[in-house]
Amino acid sequence: MIGAMSEARRKATYADLLALPDHLVGEILAGEVVTSPRPATPHARASTIAGGELATSFDRKPGGPRGPGGWWILDEPELHLGEEVLVPDLAGWRRERVPEGLGGAALTVVPDWICEVLSPATGRHDRLRKMPVYARHRVAHAWLIEPIQRTLEVYRLQGEHWLLTAAFGDEEFVRAEPFEAIEVELSRWWLE
Image 1 (cartoon, helix red, strand yellow):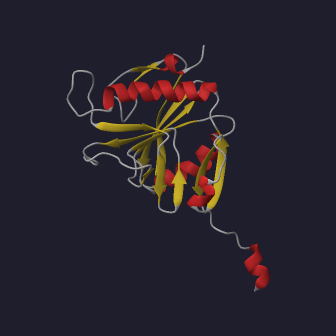
Image 2: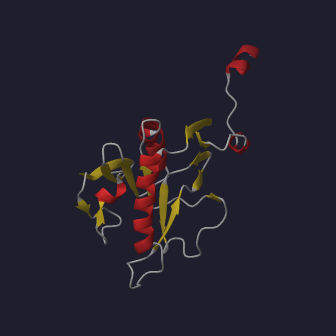
């Protein structure tokens, strides 16, 4: 019995995340702390421009002159989904579902859309560990941006699994769900 207890892992806590150095992004997945470095420039550029374009048109009340509105869009929100803590690069909530807005540092309301910007250090983790968690918690839409390969993959939750609905690349002008009301120019997301 003593041997079995020593082999059992202690579940990570939020205090473990708070103890991490500032240069790391920490998450809790399956009871384990997972860390990744702060993003490199290609990653940061793609996230900044994509998030800015979406926020300009969508992060407002519906029906304005500058875009369709109807969403809350956040950079790197801290999501507390059950016992797991995730930090997507971008996330969005439909205002009709969360009319009072989003408050506090830790968000427990499941987003309607997430976006992960993949890098050599995070791509495998984002695809294999985080995407199943988002599906399990019923996030309706997901984007995976790969700035080195210059691609955007668009997913919709279908049942319990992700369905790839579109893939774009390079310098295309695209309309991608759930934000198909606007056209975005992918070339703006990539470094020259």
